[in-house]
Image (cartoon, rainbow, N blue to C red):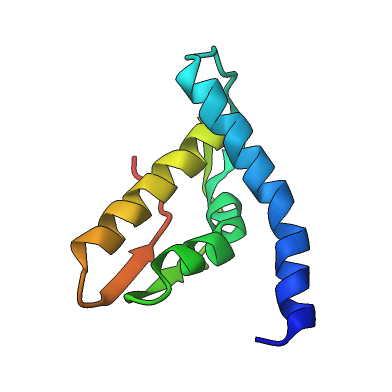
Length: 107
């Protein structure tokens, strides 16, 4: 990997890492987290690069690109739940496979 690309990735990686640390600390303190209307599809698509890096060597990942679905939730908790599911899926696929995240409204 060229040095300039690696340096850019390091420089950009601090923000998401800091945000993740803050979320984990909030979770560990059991803080009351407000719920808001969240576009779940946009949230998942925003996590795509993170998800790809998580499953990189062992499997491929795909995130759905269908229409938006809104839900009342805490976006940080939803991100952590999705990341946890992806990590569990990756660990369950030691020789490879695929992880697909799809967003759909269920009535």
